[in-house]
Image 1 (cartoon, rainbow, N blue to C red):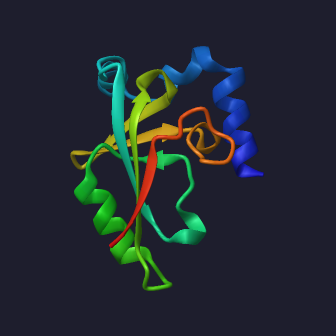
Image 2: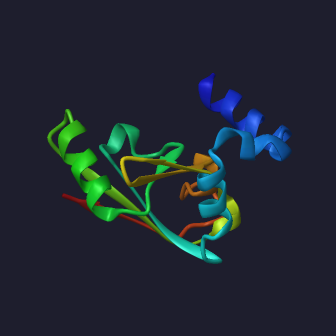
Length: 119
């Protein structure tokens, strides 16, 4: 339900995306290179999701601290067009990029340059 709501929000109201970010975050979103490498830490049950980061180390820490199955997993997406990034949020110097999970899943996504690493 939540994923459908977020997808609808970002796709139907694209002109309001900048309201989701501070002015500084919006500038960072617009200044991303044409293609980015993103990381997401977790475990097999939750490796797909909306929140990604530019910082590999942060994703690795998140995976190791939150893997209740004791099998932390890192997803690495390379060459993702920055146009696929819906929002850029920064907290404590760490980036969180919002990307529709359907954009980068192996099964249904447009961008399949994704690898998984066990940590």
